[in-house]
Image (cartoon, rainbow, N blue to C red):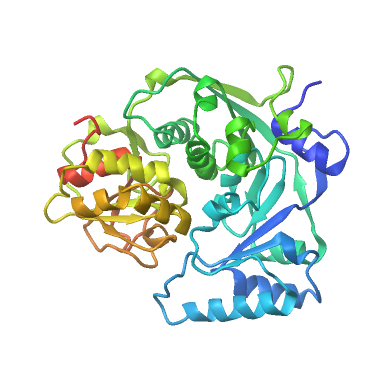
Length: 415
């Protein structure tokens, strides 16, 4: 019997063949804790009676949600994190280098075939390089810090096949939004999404990151892409035989298979206030907006900023509309400077912030108030996410978001 990608990763880790529904204990390759959860992780870790980390070099602490501090209590998280890192010998600490999910692969912490957990639901992002990665709570994280292990149930797999060439104004964000709309917010609960097909093979790692990032919005335990030459180049490694084998077998058992033609995709948006409430942009044209946000761990990468700049070049942001751009990491910020991308965005009227989570988590960087409407490239549009519960949030691709910033209303990129 063949295996899915997730089954191969778990089998390699535990040393025996597994099937969906099996309960196994895995050896964790890496963990990530961000600033919001570090005080709770630290408290629970010591409450459990641990006196040392199982491997300090496998623990990464990243300050991204709360930088710069916007509330008085934020600094407590920094002080607690620094004290914990010093006490237990942690060297992998990033205090303002970018968003956790960008840094985990960009800085080389995650490799194909790894098993990784993080204190954030969008830890599914690292599936872009063929790793099994998933979000957990602070109690589970404290347990891993002390033991290096974690029990999991082997998930069923939904196979997503996409063949063909995408239309010019369609990005991977449009694909994942369409899939979430088709599956529903709970349609992939505790299942692995395995992506394949010629469209996927032709995608950049950055585009795959966008899709893996949002897999959780359909309830998925993880999202997985087969490692290839693009993955190897991005991770700065040569793929070994195991990593090359991370492709779903033809005779593997899948819960179901979903197939798309790339040519059928169009620019779409998730409408307030549910991520699976998907409509074509063409159906929403003319809806006036107050703000546009381009950034986050979903769409703050170099190709996203470049796509927005191409739309905005030689144009101006509409009167009374704010455009906020937040690169996903310091490295991306510097690359965008060197390539003139930030110049183009600034000339168009964008406000460019330091790398970090920014507006996505509603802590700083442009929160809105009652009756205002924002088009954003991040991953969630829940009530109260970016200000009051009466703010309307539309999720879109960077190309669509940039076009809306110019028009001052919802509009398709080609217009």
